[in-house]
Each structure stands twice: as C-alpha cells, then as structure tokens.
Image 1 (cartoon, helix red, strand yellow):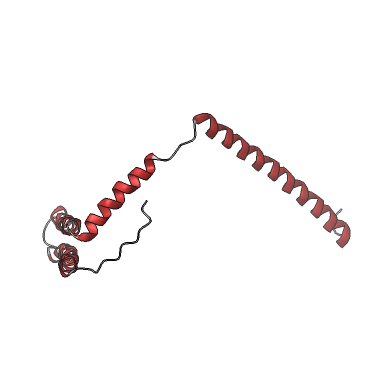
Image 2: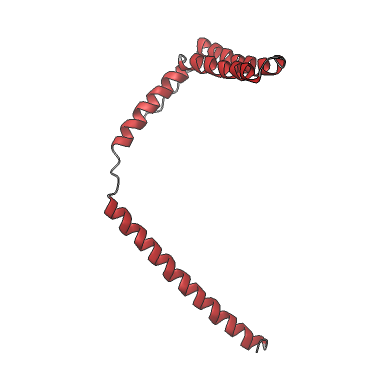
Length: 126
C-alpha cells in the first residue's frame, strides 16, 4: 500500500452527496413502514432501492473514488502474497497436532501428579 497520508478537506459537493445518500436510505426505510398496505415484496423493493440509490450517490463522491483506489491497491497487494504449498500446509498441520497431543499428555500427567500430591498433603482419598 502507499505510505503517504492524504488529508483533503471535504468539499461541499461531497458533503451534499453524503447527506442525499443518507436521505435516500431513510426514504427507503420510511417507505417500508408507510406502505404497510402493499405486498411485502414491494416494501422490501423500496428499501433495496433506497440502498442502491444511496450506494450509487456515494460511489460518485470522493469517498467512492477513494474506496475504488483502495480496492485496486488491495488487489495488487494480494497478488504479492506467496501462499504455502499443499505439502507445507500439511506438514504445519501435523506439527500443530503433534504439539497439541504432547501438551495434552503433559498437562494430563501434571494434573494426575498434583491431584495425588493434594490427596497426600490433605489426607483425603483412599
């Protein structure tokens, strides 16, 4: 990713676009409740339409542009990742399982020893 930090003032047009987008979402939600006599699919279509229109408005704002730039640079970074081979993944998994089994046996044995020591020290048990 880039190391530069961009600090730009929010323009009036971008601020207006964001407010219009918020109003579109609110209008879609309001339509859902105001159209209670309509079929449910029509009401949900109003909600979906409000969200789609709001997303389109935000997409054409500065925030939408920055989001698209972020997605493009994130995809470029994903291409740089070197994924482990199947053999490396299998070997790592085996090592983890062996370590978990050894740790489990160790703590089981430690529990038995501490239980035995507690019974001896407290005089309980048979």
